Amino acid sequence: MFWKEGTISPAADLQVIDWLTGHWRGEAMGGVTEEIWSPTMAGSKMFSFKMAIKEEVIFYEFGAMSQENGTLVLRLKHFNADLKGWEEKDEREEFRLIKVTPGKVFFDGFTFEKISENEINMYVLMEHKDKPSEELKFNYKRYISK
Image (tube, rainbow, N blue to C red):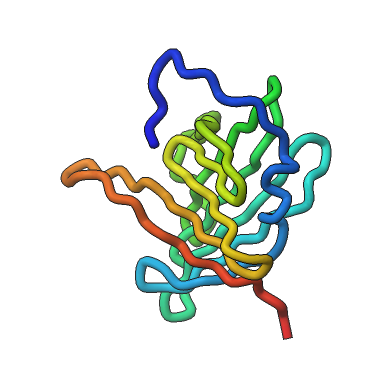
């Protein structure tokens, strides 16, 4: 889905995505990916993302999904393995809410899908400078440390 100017995000609160809370792991883009989503506190859910290939961290993302003006907004920043940021100091990626259906939350460029209590999918629109955009699927299973 793509955000169109003049579109208004639907009313929603963080309860629609409480199922995202937890520690998730999966495989994508030739490596292992991990996401950790906090419980809701003070109108937001905080998250961290890590991608590793052959036991070497490739990059991180840190961000939050916030409840603002009666709807949800997703914001994130990218970092190299040494935590040098990709975006400028005061810049970040921002994704507006487009639609909520049972078990799915659609942002402009991100979709979160609940498969079961222990499995989720995330779909991310990857934009490229020199080729068409593509949607990547990240399948995650709930991670329980041993």
